[in-house]
Length: 61
Image 1: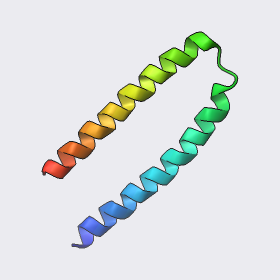
Image 2 (image 1 turned 180 degrees about the horizontal axis):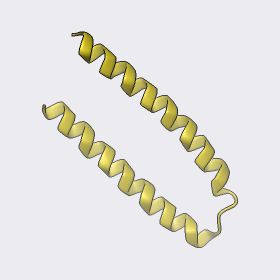
Image 3 (image 1 turned 90 degrees about the horizontal axis):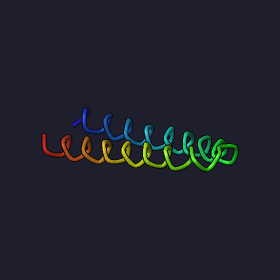
Image 4 (image 1 turned 30 degrees about the vertical axis):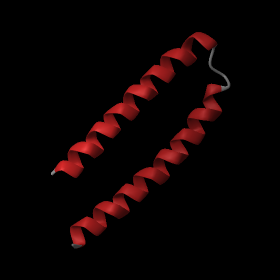
């Protein structure tokens, strides 16, 4: 039971750090040329897919 609790707090910590990273990314996006924005958007979408797959796999265990 304790392990589940620690994983939950780790998950919350990941969300908080992710939120900060998103804020920093948004601040830096304003100085990026349009061609790069599309590439970064694709990378972010792929990253979110990987996270979704990882969460799904963890729930299956």
